[in-house]
Each structure stands twice: as C-alpha cells, then as structure tokens.
Length: 169
Image (cartoon, rainbow, N blue to C red; front, side, top):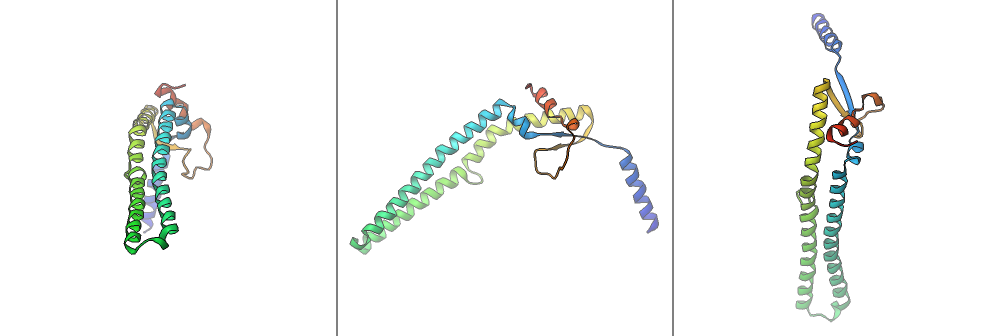
C-alpha cells in the first residue's frame, strides 16, 4: 500500500510539474460584440412574439367560448351543452398543440434558434480552438458561465483575441 501511495504521489508530482496553460473567454462579451448575433437575437424575439400572439389569440378565443357557455348554459339543451363543451375543449387543445409546435423542445423556435445561432457559435468555437492550439492552451474556460470561477485574472482573458480573429474590433 505504501508503494502505491508513493507511486501515486510521484505521478501527481510529475503531472503538476508539467504546468498546463489555460485561458478564459467571456462569451457574453464576445456575443454582444458580434452584430450577426444581435440581429439573430432580434429576429428570434420578433418570431417568438408573433407566434405567442397566435397562441394567445386561440387561448382568448377558448376563454370567450367558455364564458359564453357559462352565461348561456341554463338556456341550452343537453345536446347543445355537449356540443359547446366539445368546441371549447377542441379550441383549448388547438391552442396547446400550437404552443407545443412553436415552443416545445423540438418546436419551431428551437429549430429557428439552432439555424441562426449554430453558425455563429461554430465560428466562435473554431476561433477559440485555433487560438488555443496556436498558443498551447490545454484548457479554455468561459468566465461568463456560472462554472464556479470566483476570480479570474484579466491577463488570461482572450475574448478580444477571439473577436479580432473573427474580424471584429
């Protein structure tokens, strides 16, 4: 057991003796300085508002049908009540399906975001990768994410280098 512990300590010592270089990037800063990202975000917001308005219109229509049904229920036959209830349920279901179609996990908004943002993210990733390979960084962390970075020296931040490599000042 002692021999194993000694070998482990030697291995750890050798590994730490070969100090690894690292760098930081601030993805929020980088994205704020890329006009294409701002345009894509605005486009997503507009589409999202348009689709939400469609869903809201169907939900409002269902609510109106329900309120009318409540007000007129005493005057309706059982057959008419059933028909109205079915209409209300169908309208609510239509609104729910439209909401899922637009905003669900595999919905239109997800697909739109992916088509607009993936090329920008890939371009940033490739720029970071190129800089990391050129400068011999073993690790590049995003200081903007909540990954538990308590303090990061600005001298290790390569965000401006990434922007320059992408052609932005």
